[in-house]
Image (cartoon, rainbow, N blue to C red; front, side, top):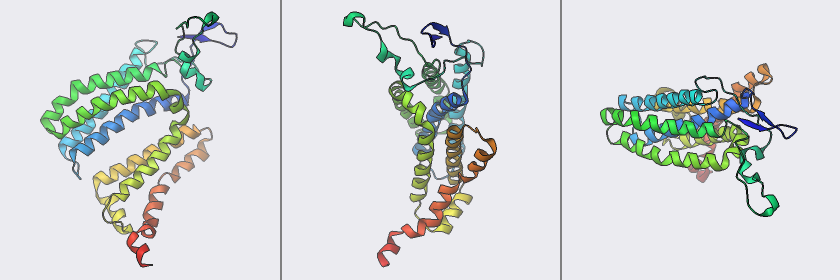
Length: 272
């Protein structure tokens, strides 16, 4: 895919995606996978992992992996997992359609191309392949292992995929700039909501629930991994030792909530 260089000449893009580019593509892939898992968990309405629920979760993971592999193979150079890309220089690179020329202010010429290739089109291809994989694989597994709730999770995905496509089409450039901070903030808020939904808000009960309940342990660990993902994307591990040590702070929001939860008990506040 060519784009204009510093001298305004058309030059073929032959750069390798940067570390940050890869983290962004990974974020867009994880976004749909996490939405699959949340939908499966919500529709299952079970506090424990059953065989049917685990099968559905693994199916969503397999669909995402197959879609990612297919996306790599179908992106230039086709048939190779190696990807060549155009470097992102500014936010405007994502919205080249807004820079179509209008000679003599008469008629707009639609001649712009994807200046950030393949970071924009690759995500659309991934979502398309994910949708195809889901409707091919998941209904059979849902009917066999999780009838009813499994099908509802599939139907929900048919709604959120178009939403993801629309969000990416409009806000891709903005998401590219802010996604690490978005991931970290969302993971902190989400883990707080997870604990706030527990009926017993005593510190000991929250700790035991996180350790002894498999579903809760997986949810908390998943939030920690997401927080670490955002932290790695922000730092890009440019200073490996320092930034690796910063990852030790990932559990801090969870620990902070558990330690301070007793100070937010409405019953205690009312009696003080």
